[in-house]
Image 1: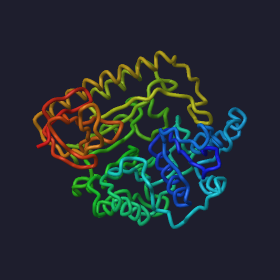
Image 2 (image 1 turned 90 degrees about the vertical axis):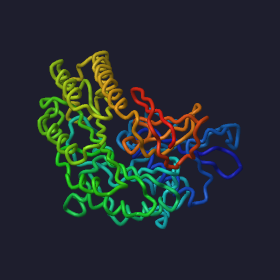
Image 3 (image 1 turned 135 degrees about the vertical axis):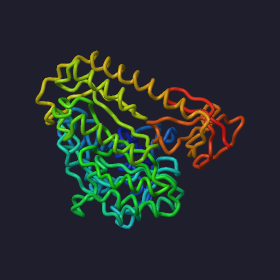
Length: 408
């Protein structure tokens, strides 16, 4: 978004959606800064050149990649639409050069102490409900040396935590190395000086590379944390969703992971109200959550995506039923989370502090990812820590999704 006036144009980047979009925004931000532009990310300042008048609005990302033609008609006030792989064209439109020397460099929009590291783009999985392959194409891994260079550059700027993201982490390397290389990548990243935590998000259960757990167990800076979206707890629904795994194999996998890394925190996400989900299927999912006792869990309500396999089925589960099923699962998970948190009272954990808010310093243990997981709250009137610092915290109280403690 450019603001209008005689002064040099200001550009404000606004990010919507997932952490992968955030990384894309950071790449655009870095390129524009490298071209000498006055650029901000989600600026709250009312400092437009001419009374807040916007000169141009450009949109890029998954939605504009997939529905560019339709969006041009429906929202004519947007000046141009760009797909997920059209960064050079976007820069050219802004009269900026694509600077190859900035590849591997990134100006962060997150607090400096943590950063998302996107290790691959796109996805080759055939999940029935997902339109990501239509928007971002097939899976393309970034070479290990490129990612290690990015990690070193981030560490030099004060990044302490790397959060590895991709549509599917576990597929990493199959396209360029002809074998799964996630464990090797994590091993090499863990050698980067200054990186204290490495966190894994978005692992696919089918074909999960168990050697990743060996690295997690043997390297002290690899968090005992795994984000693995499982989507459902019914074998029939998993087959309908084309997930390549059934409930029995999923339960075996979870047990094997916990046997290998006993204190691991597993985060998962589920879908409520997919076409064909009966009350019996939902009850299976409910019992699955009850038995597995995931440390972290979220639920999405199914939404119809054009040109996916699920779109060929009737979206015939009423919105209120989807909501009811979502609420029931989250109510169950709330109780599980509270019980697990109560067990932490009296223990001491290494905590990375993200911010100060409402009389508390707020941080996270290695078992928690930013913005989506539990937090540790430390009273600011009795303790002092700095944003981006680690401290040892003794837990003295808990709630459903938070821990309370004192710095020791």
